[in-house]
Image 1: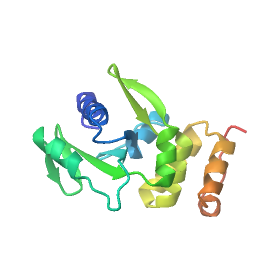
Image 2: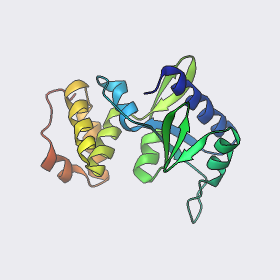
Image 3: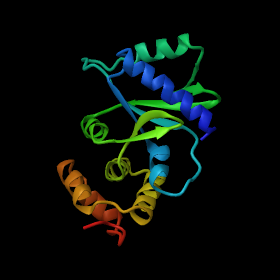
Length: 175
C-alpha cells in the first residue's frame, strides 16, 4: 500500500463515517486483507466493504459527499486518499456475513476490521479472476485455514463445486 500513514487516514475516515451513521459497518477486504494472513505482494488499491441502510437502490452519494467535503477526489471507481486509490463495495449477503465475522485488528492504535481468511477464500472463489485465484493459493498454502469453516461457507453459498474444480485442499488446512 502507499504507506502506513495512508492506511491510518483511511481507517480514521471509515471509523468517522461509521460513527456518523453514513455507513453501518465496514471491513477491509481484497489484497490488503489477504496480506494480513500471507506474505506481502503488490496491490494497486485498498478495498473497503461497506454496509449501508437497506434501500431499493444502492446510493453511495452520502459517502461520496462526505469524502468530497474533506477534499478527496474521485477517479473512476476509486477515491484517492493520500495518493492511494480506495474502492468501496456495498456488501451482499455473503459479504455481510463475512463482515459480521471479521477479525478486529489494531493499526497504529486504531481499531478496524479485516475479513477472515475463510471468507476471503470464498469471495475469491466466487470472483474467480486470475488475481483472485492467486489469493486463494496464497491463503491455502501460507495460512492455517479452518477447513470445516471454509466448507460450511462454500456449501451455504453454493461455491464448493467451483472451489473443488479449481483447487486442491491444502495440507495447511486445520481439521
